[in-house]
Amino acid sequence: MSTATRPPGNLVTPRPYLPRDRPRAVSLTVRALGPLLLIGAWWTASATGLLTPDILAGPPAVVRAVGELWGNGELPDALAASLTRSGTGLLLGLVAGVVLGVTTGFSRSGDELLDSSLQAMRTIPFLALVPLFMVWFGITETAKILLIAFATTFPMYVSTAGGVRGTDRKLLEAMRSFGMGRLALVREVVLPSALPSLLSGLRLSMTLSVIALVAAEEINATAGIGYLMSQAQAYARTDVLAVCILVYALLGLTADGIVRLLERLLMPWRTLGAVR
Image 1 (tube, helix red, strand yellow):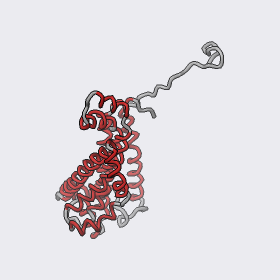
Image 2: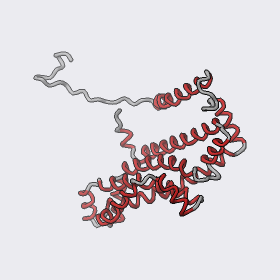
Image 3: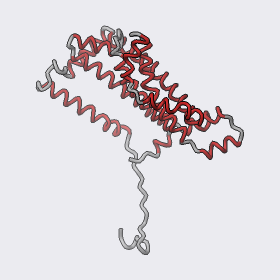
Image 4: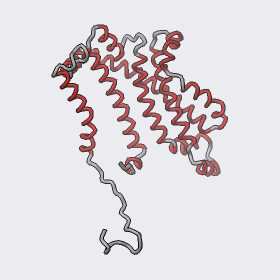
């Protein structure tokens, strides 16, 4: 800075940092670079013989497997079955997590009565419950859905309880002084205030629902992506196994995209204020 523009003394003229918006097309291109590089490395390893088909089929074989499975209807049927299981279990887990989180975060009695038990249950790996659920419910659809629900309840519970506890107490007291009831307080003040935590919990729960889906479909499933994987394993079809793994990855990516979209719609100020 020239001495002509320097203020007197040791002070300097402040220069506020104003981040420039990156065009959407550029942002999407940068995001796609990582997956494209991985596919390119996979393709090169298959074409040069470093990766043999008995270990993992190459991208062309996987594309042909997608056409085969989609043409005979196996992939759409399996996808519908898996999405139904995952969606139903996730919905049950989210409802349970939000209700329990609001109860323990908003009520001292609820916190003292429930929180220690829920924190103890949270530490149980959901995979450890597979044998017990099979004893209770058999190899039925109920066992699979409840396993997904159990896995997704606790991330939502922890995030909701934390967000509710962080609600401004002065704001709550002010609303109470105006005569607002408890249900109205939760609906109008607590839940909007806890929205960032709720969306964080939703993201974790949606990711876990895909992981739990893989485990649930190992319970002697007769339909779904897990069933396709077990059939492919029996016949050593690495191309079909790769298709199933890619489907799981796409489900996780779609779930993350849904949460990002909800963040843009419900919290536009966070997007506008993001600085990277």
